[in-house]
Length: 254
Image 1 (cartoon, one colour):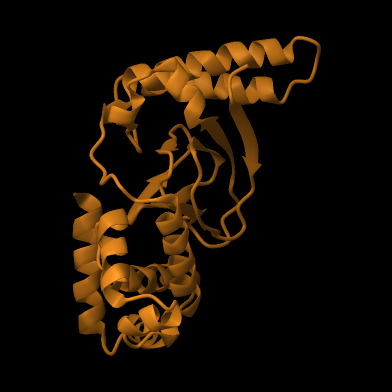
Image 2 (cartoon, one colour):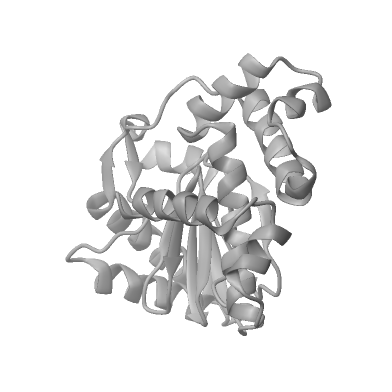
């Protein structure tokens, strides 16, 4: 039996950052979602899907506040993928695949979801067959050479999630990023290396990205001015916000 699980997603608020030893496909059915994956932001709409690689720290939220969203998360165990393709450790899946086989893969995903909803004596057999076909298509068409930095232990990854969650909740209280190291009783050098190795970004860059996300969401959901939102979310003035915002947009377009 293929090691795969399917979960309904009805996102009314942000799913907190986490990681697991499986790959995960995020598949919107209605509405759109925004995924944060190892420091990068991706947006996905119906007809497309995102792939989160094993051990990548990720979270998701609705793109538009108060927008009704419904979709599915499909998880495939990494150790099962290793039995299917022994060289998989040298590769990773493309997060936002847009290749020639997009419609074929998405059609297979849709068949898998439709079969998941059926309960009869033969549904498990059919589900297994479609799941193997999906794994074949993903391995055949969406793999690229592994480029991420190796050597991040599970302990360090779990510690990083703890730090990121704290920053997400308390970003307004953080005046100096060096104070975070004291809060978690670790050295600042260790924490800085953890961010750089795992996310390829500095602690300050991440803190600014959190502030920018909150301002973006409030710009859509409220009538407050940019100046008021900048002050409320920790920027001294709009000039510093626009500078950080432009830098963030440049990173996302790379």
